[in-house]
Amino acid sequence: MSNSPSPKLAGAVFCNSASQGDGGKVDCRGVFTSFLAWSYPTSLRSWHAILTLHDLPAGTTSISVAISQGQGKKTTLAAADIQRGKPDLGSVINLPLRYRFKSEGFYFVHFTIVGTRRTLKVPLKVNTMPWPRFSRKQIEFLKENPAVPHSLRMNIQCSDCSHSYTLEECVLPDSELPGGVLPFPEAGSFECESCGHVLQVRDIQGQLRNSIKNAVRQAMKGGK
Ligand SMILES: [Zn+2]
View (cartoon, rainbow, N blue to C red):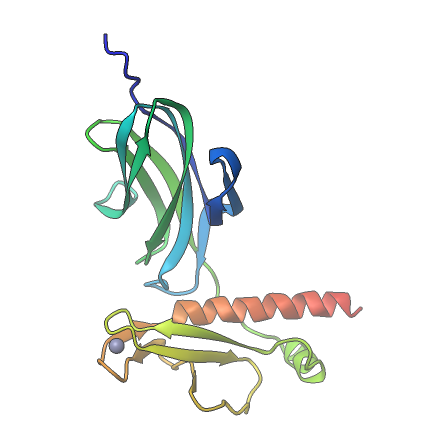
């Protein structure tokens, strides 16, 4: 029998942001089980997986992370090497992940200890949201309350040439945009001026509209 322990995957959760805390712990914010999407492909979604492991041996333990839609083909998301000077009974690992979802439904994130058959499969759901529309009342409220934001901007980078753009979503008609700021394209796709690559921006536009709508709802509730 070997004295070296064999590593085990204990569990994983997903969250919006995370950082290394004290004593090997990880501080995470915004734990979730599903993504909300307004169009496909979605914008490049970034999140963190917090993975717990038991019985890490001294030396290097390699982890690979992949995603599949249902039982479909796996796409690699990340790889990480965990180094330990001596055996470690328990560890918490923060893995930043990024993925562009092509359709709604059930996904699995697969965590594997490289060189073993040990895999942990964690479900992740992508839910399609209705397009955020504004009622006449909400529009009137926004016109009368300039302190409540009626527009939001987002910096978008071309995935091919890294050229960056600022797009603005405004729910009040006839607002003038300053130079360098562009409105979201009607069709949801945006051609990079510098390399011609077509960027899908409708999902981001939906996210911004949804934020504006939530803020209006909150403000209307608070005002009464
Ligand atoms: Zn480009």
